[in-house]
Image (cartoon, rainbow, N blue to C red; front, side):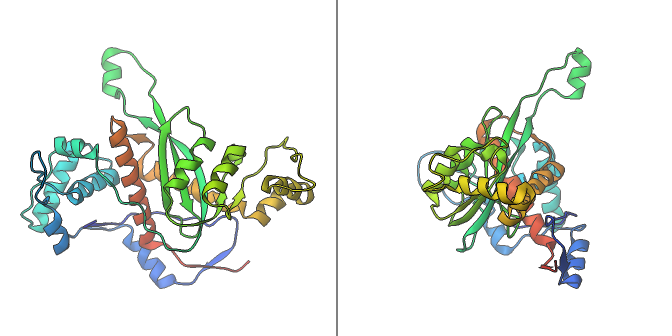
Length: 321
């Protein structure tokens, strides 16, 4: 993106004592999170206008970069499309750039099919943490309720997140209907993760056979860290060929549930809960768009925004206990 946005955000390391090793840089990062810096690189200025279309149809005026830039500013500042149009126009005027501003109709139309790049990852296997949260759909406002004296219940969607434990980055997201359960979205989440997976960690809602099967089909060597339900019993083959779930049940019986959580690394799942909390506090707990295609674009851009904010001032930790 051709701009940089700083805001005060926190990143939590669960249930362990750590010491920050880069205090000067970390403090500078904390101060930088409260500032707002916007710049356009020469490459971004050159890529603002859309390239010539070789096929049939009208010639687009704005590139995907221009649309993504405007929609990112919209997500950060929680603006309507017309307000986003005004913000982009004011930024270009302050910078003295002679660039056309996408109008609100163009932003809405292009958001339906905009392709947002996936997060880039290294080649090392990742420890994947998954969870879900609810997002409300846009609906009648307070003025409409007050005018007509009626109040309708808003619909909502379920957002499924996959976070990388070592960085806290959101590496995959899936938006589904409110009736979709968490376990059924493990396959779609894994399909959106590029590269190998070292472990898959989720709460008790993922204690299902199809979850283990989905992980085995895509990453056979990945560990599955999911707490068995309170009434779980070993399988019929636990004595001869124990499954990973059987080993979890045995470890809980020997060490207790808290002991199993510490030894298995289940405590790291708090990071994905932090991401869901950051999403609601920074981006909001609702969806501003009205169609499925625009919902998908809105979610992808929001995930990219949170990852960028996390990179701005994330401290370097060393475990001391």
